[in-house]
Image 1 (tube, rainbow, N blue to C red):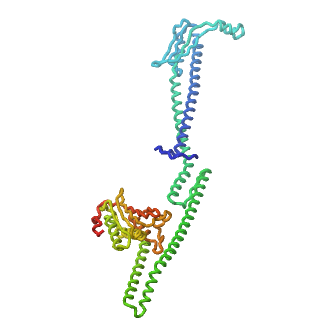
Image 2 (cartoon, rainbow, N blue to C red):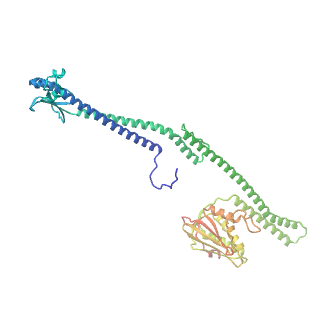
Length: 490
């Protein structure tokens, strides 16, 4: 079996049954027509020879019987002879001529043409018949001394012969058609017995393609189809076993991954909760001491409150990552949300951090957003950007529309990200810092994906990092009007 390129034409393939039946019908029809034509021709030739021989025999017989009538010129006897000859099948006209070529007896049928004729000379030997019989003289001498008395002519038609040929043609045609139909019927039965297992195999193949692997096909009664079905069943069994083994492997890997995630989660949880709890314990120990100054007591209480808030934020991060919120998408002014986040960070860092800028090519772009979820994602990215940037550096937020998407680029002035790390920074619990859960960017990535968008990172070592967020634009105006940076004092 050769393997060829894909047929790009519109020609539909024919089935094996159609091809077999077409071939058998063509073979039987051509054979039947050839045999029928040959048989009819042979029979026609034989019948024509017999028919013409019969006419010649009739002419000779009539010539012998006419000899006496011509000798004695008995025309009434000759008329009876022509009338009797006219009763023969196919004879339409009979004439008897004398030695001078004058017709002395004639009989014919009305309204009949006579395209064919046969003649025979009426002759009388010149010696006595007794001398020839008793051996006196030579027969050759008698023939040489024959006397021409006249001629007998029989006119006949071969319409009956042609009718016979037409009847034979019709019969052979009917026989050929019957043989073709019978052959086609028998071949159809044979082909179906051959193709039935193949059709079952095709149906089974489609069921296997749909994922049904607990099946087996029968091979019929032919050795070849039995072997084919056995091979197919072996293949399905191998696929079933491979899929079972693969599923078990996936389940085992999933269990191992879950265990690894649980171990990593426990390690991060222990590390992140240890410091706040140590500070809280130390602060409470100091508060238990008698006679501490009010200023120290107030400071310790502030430490306890801050660490409790820190623990609360950690718990919120873990919950947000483990059970992500389904976004409630509404048309919003994307630039307004960005400017709000930027202004919040400006206030938070005051003059102790990099300068934060927020620009937009179109401040009224409507985007489908869950403001709370999107704000949390941008805050996590912006928090990392502020932490890695120098105090005299710049962190920029810029937005623009491209095709059917709203694009946000957040660029920091940090050391950049190594290429081998760029694909890992969105993984949960991955961090390059001494502190932190490593969930910030993972939560941001999940939040953007929940909006139907994507987040990418473009970074070069020592040249800063740019996070690129792409979100679908809304088809209707935002529910809140666009706000410029002046609305926030920025």
